[in-house]
Length: 459
Image 1 (tube, rainbow, N blue to C red):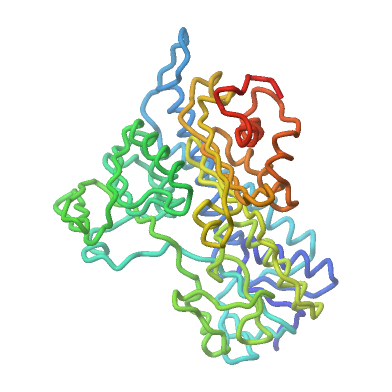
Image 2: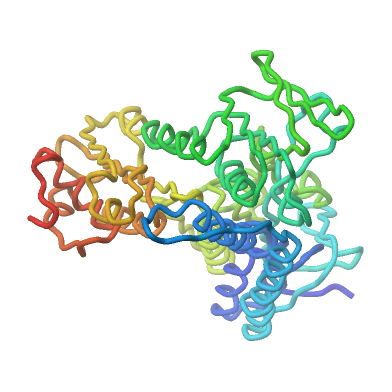
């Protein structure tokens, strides 16, 4: 006998749970179908585990390298197995309280098994038919593995398996300098690995901030090779990564951080008339509808911004449109991103290059933390904040920061962009003294007053 629902969701991460909760609030009968662990990438193998391990690594690093006179601190060897065990306890607790308990509270079903589309209108789970008025694909993405000669034979880590290691690798070579590569490289360097990154660092951020982050990582002992990996060879216990310019980087382990691939294996989407784009992600319109009008998709599986808050927003819109016949869309204006290095690298809105490409006449300012009181009292002035504005009317187009707590600072930038604030608005708005958020006010003031003429607390 077939199971009948209003909305059948394949996946159980941020997009899936957001859609399920909204569907239940609309009074719909909802089911989630998950073949692996409930909760998706973020809580199980992504955001949560990586950030708690980064926090642990930061504590050790501060003990080794704190900048204050008269304070003596030391750090011993790392028991990585204990760090991983504590991480796993946190994950299990959050999965229970933020996912499984919510499913029970909102009263929607979860079926464990492999979902498969038999045709455009038929979904089965391990052979049993599941009928619904609408379907949502929210299966997420997995670490992409580049086709490098010798890589499979040599063995490698991904962002998932790296956080399950019981012993800190002696020498780690990271392929990729994006979000994951940066975070994982600093994590393992601070836990005791000798780390080399092969790739361009933070390629999508402001170059002034990327270059400063590069110097910070180098200062911590991380080697950076601005090149492209083309092959991997194993010789005994050593992995040798060859680059496009002919150099070789050696390590005891290789971490692949080269992007993400849609998790669509086993779904037989071609049977359902659901098309994929050239990169293998599910093709959707602005309303999250796929090429099959009865099937929607949301989150990482669509190839959009790979953030759990984006997945949640898209899942909400997909459920609304699927169940209510709406054509709502997600507003991505001022969308923030954060790289959880230390200091953090965060951005919202356009970079200077993006603004110029979009046809704006840009007016930009960069303020180093040597001109921010919080940086001075922290004895850490390595970062900076950049403000991108429309020269014609002063509206804020983008905010980008490399600071301690940049992920918190950037929320003010999101508000400024979303609600059309100007540089003058920011310059003349209250900012608490000796906070990193004050940097946003100071960089706005620097549009009209030279930095060397700004007092610590004058307005």
